[in-house]
Image 1 (tube, rainbow, N blue to C red):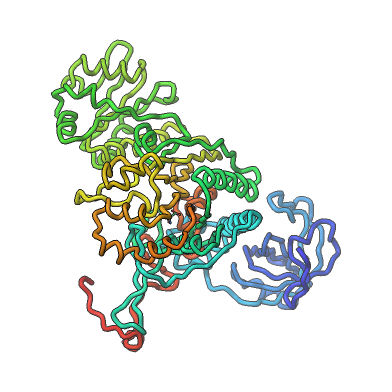
Image 2: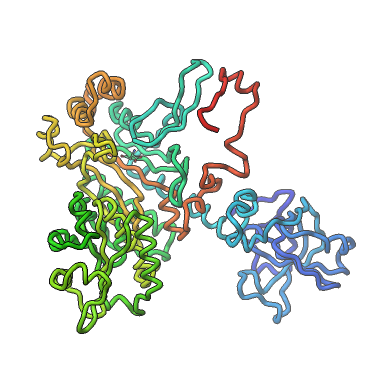
Length: 597
Ligand code: ASP
């Protein structure tokens, strides 16, 4: 790093070492800690690193004044680099054998008493950390995370630039789109009664760019969805958005696989071991793992035993099957249980299953000479034995069951599977297990029984389903050229090859029950654009926040965003959202009445 002499600094700490002993320097930074020993005071001065400052009463006229400096004040220190007494070495600092013997200290800005210690920021209540974000940000952990985030994004930009992509900015004030989430709306002052929406993703813009001959587009894009926040969701978030013309699904998968393999080692040189990419179909993911974003770091698999238990009189299984549900199970082999699963753990798993909609969590423990379970007497000995045979369960194994509507049965067992992995310590540390999930259904049922798109209305069906697609038949069967990238159980990217022909896109909307008029209103502009020689195209978008959450090993995406919103969508520091003054509302041509407040 070049030395830039400013009025505050002749050097940065990173330029100082044992080799610069005797050098007279001026540095500036934050008081990380201050220790008063009477005739001597020690300050740990922090900028990109820490350097110990020695304040000697004999060298500083204002010594008593300086003793009152509060932690986290900013100071400017001039002095000479000297070697420390050997019993004063600090092996945890690069600069641990030297210190700056101060000849002058200027207090640039005195800090108030802190609401929490910076070093303990991570242990502080989140609401307090959010209110004092500017203090939490001074902690080593947040500084590192923001630096890594910057480097990942830079690495993405450099890599895509090398491959002739160009970054194009797309609007934030836009019209409603068709991505399926609730949108934020912005009233228009110039067009009273009309509204902009904030984009859920630049989906339609990037497709217009393809139509406009920008063949390789990307953007680090802000996206907005008016949904309740969760650990891995925020009302505004960042995507790496990408689209290419004249590409196949495999081209996009290959390109993104290479990008992943390039950027992560570029930033985290040795922290992460990247396992080989795997690919599975949506159907296999649902069958084996009960989710379309399986965590493949551990071998626990779901099995469907609906046919085996179909004949049972056991109400817990019988009723869901009669109602069109399924029965699935998961076997925990004794090999995986370094410590036997305890009663308390089974209770915890049961509560978890219940929170996902199951009545309870039935199980069978396989013993040397018997099966142990409260359900055997209802299930019957022979059906129980059939299950054991089917699952090849051995003495010491436990089999857990989930019987419900497929959605609930799968979701509950997926949650149980993940929890078991956690309890049994099955998750390998510092490993990334990337997985492409392909062959998603083009459509899914809504709660009211009608059809909607499963991921993206612009996805193109797989070639073998195009005939049915155009005839508007077999809606449930049609598979799309759609793919997700899943990492350690989180969906980190998703995309598709698009329907670039107006006819195919129109058919998608017909499957979803749109009339010609509704289609025109909704995507007329896309159909018009595509009818001027739009190229075949496809793309993908990565959730940068989720990726960073995994790479930084954080619990929530809030921990990798400089200014996140709370779980209820508020920014405590800047106090948004907040009411507007009458005058501002008047200027915007708005009078407010609320349906609920
Ligand atoms: N726009 C899509 C999304 O945000 C991603 C894509 O299909 O490119 O999920």
